[in-house]
Length: 83
Image (cartoon, rainbow, N blue to C red; front, side):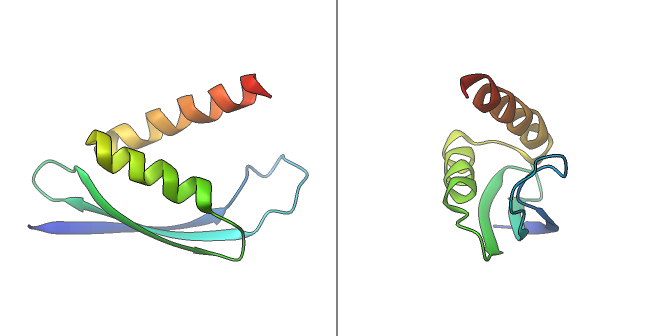
């Protein structure tokens, strides 16, 4: 399998949220040919269980890198409306 990866580092929550906001490092591994996500690694001092669960679902559903920001935006919006 011919793969590539992207590394990101950001805070767990948006800056405007007044909560403890630890850094999260993440590596997303995807197939070069169709950009389908095939793996993910992350590190944080925060309990990042929800993040890795999200990526396990993304891999199961065959999500691609270009689809990821759109799905994450809808996920975030749906969680905010549920609160």
